[in-house]
Image 1 (cartoon, rainbow, N blue to C red):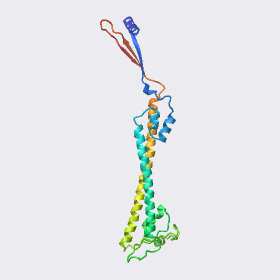
Image 2 (image 1 turned 135 degrees about the vertical axis):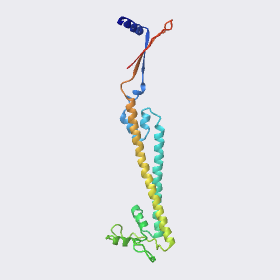
Image 3 (image 1 turned 60 degrees about the vertical axis):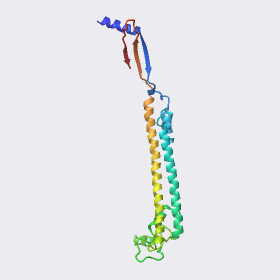
Image 4 (image 1 turned 90 degrees about the vertical axis):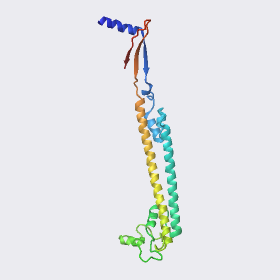
Length: 235
């Protein structure tokens, strides 16, 4: 029985063809540098994938990054215009004498005046006057801002002055929204880069193996009677 099996195997080896196939995907990036791939993705998402010859996600990463840059720059510019508009509006309608400082402008929207409302209404709000609010908080009236900085929106009994301060608050609110959009878009830009860098690492690990898969296939020739014998060996 052993003699028969030995003869059979010898015959197969003698009359068959040996075919070796290699899976190129597992080592096609073995000559690439992982640090270059990660660095390219950090600079511009999708470039690491392009460097590693994986082009399917290049466009989504690039277009996403471009859109986020447009949103980030646009929201920053719009926010700066809103705060400038609010400052000019306060100068025109409240006699504001301060600069374009966001914290100060928020304070200007919270109090109708710095040192007493002109034409004080009959039942003023406790916090209508900034100086009075500082005194009630046991602070000096010039502790945060010098006395040179003044503003007065006028009495709340006057509908026009109320409309003015409401418009000012609206412009400052739009500024804050634009800044939130800017911050979110910057965070998304960072996240897009992190995802692309991790994807580049994943691709490199999957396609930079120094070893390769091969398959040895014995393909016996067909005889005149149609008989055949095939044996596959994978390693």
